[in-house]
Length: 291
Length: 304
Image (cartoon, rainbow over all chains, first blue to last red; front, side, top):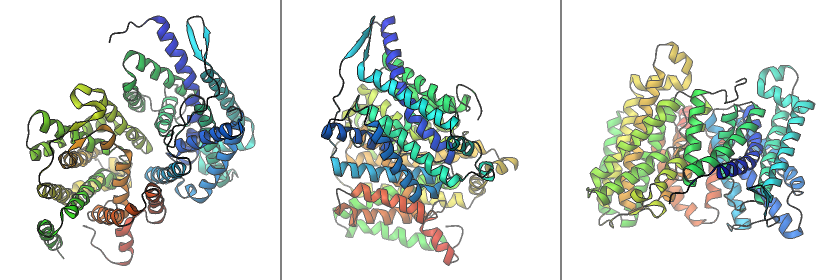
């Protein structure tokens, strides 16, 4: 079927893409911090997102708590889960060859996803909190997407303030720039690892809470976000946290355009080609900046 | 002891086994050989060079589709169709490996992370040719003993190739890339080309295994032939036995297949969680594998 593509459709797709992109940026920020500080490729990031989504779902289902407020619960809970995992297991693979961290976090992720399936079954659940759209001119913006986007922006901004203004945040950035030098300057890098992994899991959980108002909640829901997050990091440039933000927005728009001009099935292929091209041609990220 | 002295009795045993085993056990052995070949092929690129191929199942999957299409649409016999599975697998490896093997450190692993999903999406997209999500059904298989010998042949070929590589200048060069790539380059090696050769070899065997598997399973579909867990299983089997060795993937594939058959199959619901726990345990407790641990206590020859 040949569909005529109008300017309004393109604009609509770009707006929706930007809204989803804000969420990608938030989720990728957590992964980027963990990768930057510990050189750990955390494949379990999507599983943390899933757990965050379930926290929101259950609080909404059992107590009727506003899903956006439940972020105040899901983030600390997953911060604790992340910190415990870091303390027990992940600390062993900090700065190890990538195979160790890839496999270890994959092992953790299938144990957690399997436990989630046993506890809560594989059923698709949804948080029906907000429905409908705002209509601005010819463009419709779904309410949950817009509010999720704004919330994601606020959380991302808070994370930046934390990274730039607090002693711990500065220590995290220093450790990701140069671990040994940070250590020489008196930073307890073991403690920074703990905080960073907890923070990474917490940011994934915030993303999960926001995803739950838009899409279904189920044990495998986090998987797609792992690859997307790596793509966002690569687009923005590794270790470049503001870059990750723009990378997220860009990925949302590219996915939207790809599904409009090609087909939804091929968005992953377009995204993958983009990843390989950027890695090869601009390994420092599209926005330049330091490597 | 010469390697042939180990290999010949094992080969003789493999040759006579179908005569004494039941159909169920022949089927089990086919899967053991399949895992030996898959774990061994992953070992060729990742065990030797240290470049982690996290999308290796893509080569297996593309092999299954090649054979299925050749058998159903072109009327080929299953044996040449299965062997032909290596051609598109190597072409994919060339297209992906030529650019991506230049990426250093974790970036190669990241670039391979999504490969299986991409090939799966492409296979699903070209519906008219590949049958889309429903997949392709092959004629039912009449006798599995020929597949047994074919799969055993691939497992043997992978192991022999690994042995020949490890005991050649090519193998030493690959190992030097794993130990220190910059030093290897400084010695005048064209590391990009060496890695590409290893990657092509390593992709060819999963293509063939996939080709035979398509005939054995009688059905291929995107969801069942591109799962990430297959890549992880190859890696864990290889690590469990000892990566970068000849017999490591063989030992790992045999032991874990038997473990799976005897233990995990009884715990259906926690099966995946047990596998996850095993992955964590292998990475943390025995990253050098069984052969690595044995080497600490016994003077094993370096050539195995």
